[in-house]
Length: 569
Image (cartoon, rainbow, N blue to C red; front, side):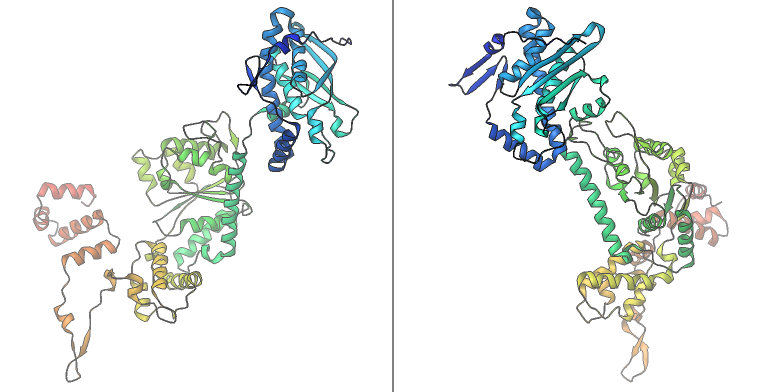
């Protein structure tokens, strides 16, 4: 390695490229417009960034600022000296330009440039560093402070030589050393070159803020849930429900995916939370996402995250639900609504424990347990080609069907009292509880909306009931008449005080509309009603298809077709 000290060529060519146009309010260096800034303003700017972003993030900003400035000045140095004086003098134009701009005086120590033999080494002493001046008055740092100058030297050499060059400030006056000294080599010759390269990549603060915001939201949700543990704990003593809980608890210790089936409003998310709390992942996050509430074109980015620029409107990178749930449980409600692309990505995540952000170039490892839920018949959707067969069998390792509330009749009073207590606490009300008629209505109603409908009805009743008053049936159900609660007016007293049928009872007649409403509120679908009518007509006609068809007002072929459709022959 040469030990001779290089000599600077004349800087006249560089100074001739500097032009001041005070009348226009402009300063030019070659084809670059420049500005003058006082040292005090620069110190203020630096202190603001350090205070706002922290030392490490501010250091990265200033290194990138210097690096970009060095890239631009390298074009000027090469254009002024490249053909006329050669590579070595073009390289020395960088330190001279730095001095011309008032940043620092760079005294050459050693310089060895031999690209043919893959060799580069340079060493400079910095004197009068503006960044040392800017730092004075603050605590003595343990690491060098000439961030912008270091970035400039690396950017200038990289652009000029066409190879990645990195500099290190091995001594710094700001740290108490005798002077500032830098050494430059090809990047791969530095053991920590990857860490320095990472500093040169843009690191938007907004990405970190979004990530922290997502984590705070998750923690706040967990905290609220723990403070009101009764709000999410499953309640019920019905045998079918207790059996589900026992099976759920036995599955908690394992790490297999769990599939929860059942009607809407049965409390599948509550059971998923219980599974999470009973598992070894209880200390991790529980992230719930309703797949049906997210547009198909956005579901992938919501689940797996998105890289900046992946599509129009993706102005910053964003974590997906899988990354947010790392180390915990991800609950996918309404799983059947996933798009085909999202189903394929979910299958890979389950099998490989890896995800790829939308627009990303690499994969990320994730440690997530998936609990899925749906109210539809997944197997039927598989047969229809709307759901991937391999994904179905991957999720079907442990399947539980949550019973509807109408099959947990004995649990209704306990659930009603639970929701009453929570609603009274929330709305600061003190009622006298349910009236006898309201309590009877609650236990008789079929609750097609399941636990969710029960909770909403009781919340309505609490809102409409004054303090120290009973919650009436009308407060719970309003003017909406529940078919199962339509009672015969019974018997009253006549003028002689004897029991007699009331006028309402004798004259009351159930209309066809009321009969149809009764079918609706019993939770029957059109197919259910049609099958029941077909079977009833068949029984009344003693198997005579023609007679049964006439009974229903349809042709024999039409009746036979419906029998075949429902496999009722």
